[in-house]
Amino acid sequence: MMNCLLLSAFRRRGCRVLETVAGGLITGIFYALLASGFALVFGVTRVFNLAHGDLVVLGGYVGERLWHGGGISPLLAMPLAALPAMLLALASRPLLARVGEPFVLRSVVLTFGASLLIQSALQSTFTADFRLIAVPGWDRGLTLLGARVAAGRLITAATALVVLALLHLLLSRTVFGKSLRAVSLDREGAASAGIDPARVDRIALLLGGALAGAAGPLFAAGQYVTPSAGIGPTLTAIILTIFGGVGSMSGLLFGGVLLGLAEALAAWTGGAMWRDVTSLALLLVLLRWRGTGLLGGRAA
Image (cartoon, rainbow, N blue to C red; front, side, top):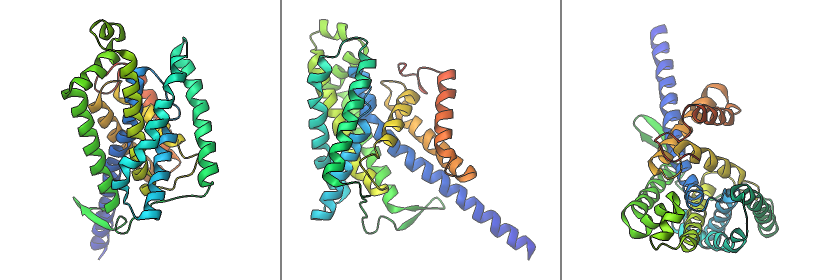
C-alpha cells in the first residue's frame, strides 16, 4: 500500500514537472514574438523603444474590442490590431530624425515620454478596467507528451512560431530583408551601395510596430490587460534582445525558450516572486559570460 502511494505521488510530481516545462516552452516562444519587433527596430534604427510594450497593449485593446464587439477571434484580429501600432510607430519617425547624439540615450528619453502618453490615452479611452479576451474552448486542457496544457496556449505558441518563421524568411530570403540587414550592420556602407537608410528606418519602424500590435490580441487572450500593462512586454523585449544578440532571430527564439523555462521552474520551486528575479539573474550572468548573445549576434 505504501509503495503504491509513493508511486502515485512520484507520478503526480513527474506530471507537474512536465506541465511546468511545457508551459515554460510555450511561454518562451510567445516571449520571442513579443521581443521580435523591439529587436528589429533597435537593430536597424538604434532606437531603444520603451513604448514597445504599450504598442502591444494597444493591440490587445483593439483585439478585445473586436472580440466583444464583433466576435472576431484573436487570430483574425492580429492584422487589424497591427494597424494603429504601425501608424504610431511611423509617426515617431519625424521626432526621432531630430534627435541628436548620443542618439540611443536620447531615444530612451523620447520613447519613455511616448510610453506615458500612450498609457494616458489608453486610460482615457478604455478606462483602467481589466480586460481579457476569453475565447470559448481556449481554456480546455489538452495532453501534450503527458502534460496537460491549455488549448489557447498551444494556439498562441503555434501562431508565434508561424509569424517568427515568416519574419525570418523575410529578413533572410528577400531583397527587402537584405537591405534591412545591410543598414543594421553598416549604415554608411549601405548608403554607398545605393540603399536609402532613412527609407529603411521607416520600414523597420512600420514592421516593428506591426509585430508589436499583432502580438496584442494573443497577449490579451492570455492575461488581463490594463493601460499600464506594457512594462512587462517591454522588459521581456529588452532582456531577450540582449539574450539573443542584435540580428539573431534564432538567438531570440532560443533566448525566449530559455527565459520561459527558467521563469516557470523558478515559480514552481520557489513561488511566483522568484520569476522576475530569475530572469534578471540570467541576464546578468549572460552579460558577464557572453556580451554578444546566446548564439553570437551583435552585442546589444
